[in-house]
Amino acid sequence: VKVLRNGGRAAVIVPEGVLFGSSNAHKAVRKMLVEDQKLDAVIKLPSGTFKPYTGVSTAILLFTKTSSGGTDDVWFYDVRADGFTLDDKRTPIEQNDFPDLL
Image 1 (cartoon, rainbow, N blue to C red):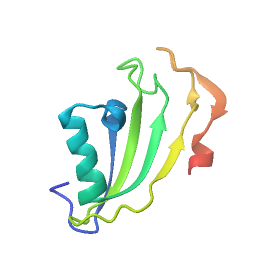
Image 2: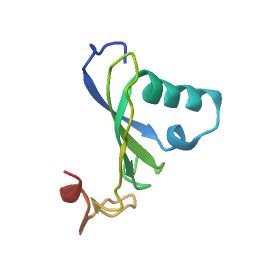
Image 3: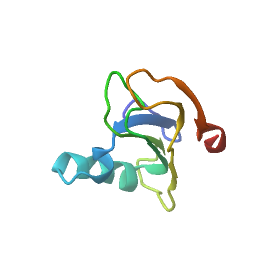
Image 4: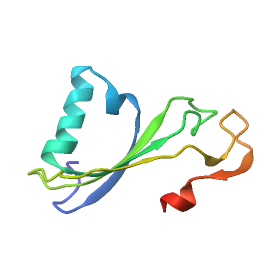
């Protein structure tokens, strides 16, 4: 966030734990994004999206730097298929939510 100018937009990929974790670190990240910046969207990705590197569930967070808050509404999208199998081989398949997402 520090490298963005006010009004700058960013997208970050985070483990799903950042969204739902109860540790102080998870709470601090959520507070910073929702109360200090403008969280625009949360795009939940299925477990296995980044296989074979990791099978952890992830999400894409899109936000705008404001340094003064401004999160009123957050757009959520749950991607259930990304056009590939969710195993280590990541073989192309027909099911793909990304065209609808875009």
